[in-house]
Image (tube, rainbow, N blue to C red; front, side, top):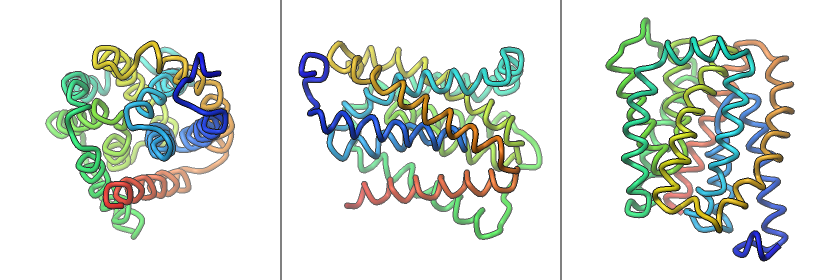
Amino acid sequence: MDVFFPFLSPLQMVLALCIALCAGFVKGVVGFAMPLILISGLTTFLSPDLALAGLILPTLVSNAWQSLRQGLEAARQSVRRFKVFLIAGAITLIVAAQFVRLIPAQALQITIGVPVVFFAMLQLSGYRFHLPQRSARVEAAVGGFSGILGGLSGVWGPPTVAYLTALNTPKHDQMRIQGVIYGAGSVLLVAAHLGSGVLRTETLPFSLALVPSALLGMWLGGRVMDRIDQAVFRRATLFVLLLAGLNLIRRALF
């Protein structure tokens, strides 16, 4: 084991696999939060750059599965529909990834956590913030911000989910669109962090080892998602957003 995972003990490897299983299950239910759960769990016993390397391949493979669950043509339609979001996010992700070793983790966690908690609490309280129609400027801004967060931390779900929720997107459409957006981001994340040095010979086997557990969890979560209605799906999405945001704030402050 030391040959493939020199920075992990057997117990830490088991814990990492369990975290990947949980992350996959949550993603299967609500369509996001795998990177958030992986980065939060893995950084309790690994350095941030190793945790980031670990989440890259599970995120890539699971997003490909999610985006194609309803077929290739449906995925293509989502790409065309959200091309502004995807282009803006791609540009900012590639640029931001080159600064991953320079920006304090606490600053990034606060930047993500505070607006996410505010949005989720507002929505769960009964206030229905929504966008009556899509705007290219808003979409570019949200996509660009998501790309910055993704490049720096591997986490781009919260602003994307907040945007789709504000548009009152149906649950199966939202799951597919999230898969397409996150899938495109995942491909760029792999390329960006091959360049940044985060994903390298020493860390690649670790990231690959987490893929089967993540997919098993996602399959189990998908069976749950198929059985819940739109209202329950929306509240579950907001609840996961709230927990994710609170956890990021906790990590930044304590």
